[in-house]
Length: 362
Ligand code: F6P
Image (cartoon, rainbow, N blue to C red; front, side, top):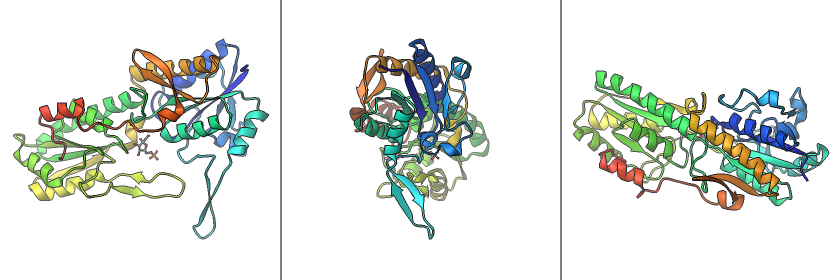
């Protein structure tokens, strides 16, 4: 018997989060359930003193009425908020980890919360799965602009990121051509090159570098030299790496995954040297996570939100809602987080690149 559910958003934001919150809230209220949003992942529950509203916010139809077209998340999010491993900084630069998951379990009881809809990527869904195994009733909703979650054909936020990146690449053609330059554009994509590949193809790039296909800088330079075009556009996923080389790391910080970045600058400097052509680089970075979700991401978010409530109503737990066209289905969280959906090096999109003479650096 469900009377009250909680919703949280975790990890990097993605356009479409508010659509999920809206649909889940409205669908739950239709069933007579109360809905509560947890501020910033689990922080609202673990550290309520940090929030003027006590870290939990009652979600009403009025509160969610006009949010499905907005980027970001009205609940806020964090990407270093694992309650099973809370990092504390000690004097002298040392850190210790605490397991605060008991406090979360206890808080669900105290606040009369019967279930959790956890909206997040691989990290947040892994945490949600651990809570499900501890007995919390949990339904996960897949989110990431990188589209690297297994078991679902699409995650919301991805299409918005691809559309925006494509528009940016379109704009770079004229300036690159006017100056006869090479321009290297860096897009997000830590483990998977889906954004780079899709935006690169749509934006008519000359070369696309993705994590799944380590690149040879000499082959890239050779391709640029022999192309029958006075300028070149290269799209690089942040997680792309050279053959026998490493990814470009911007920063390392305790308790969170390393921040990637710098691949575009690195490649631009190298191809400039190897080709003798002037090169420039730019990083689209968090611009890809911002802005209003495109229609498909709104629809996906709304469908996922409604499906998450329906799954709870059916008594399901430990599952993730997933797009498996033409349906939104439930898949076990265990399965959803067991592998990442990376670009198959022999897949259709890669073949399309080869047919179009787009260099992949191999
Ligand atoms: O959401 C995933 C992602 O977009 C990755 O591609 C990227 O590495 C990461 O987020 C960056 O997150 P942040 O800078 O917010 O920590």
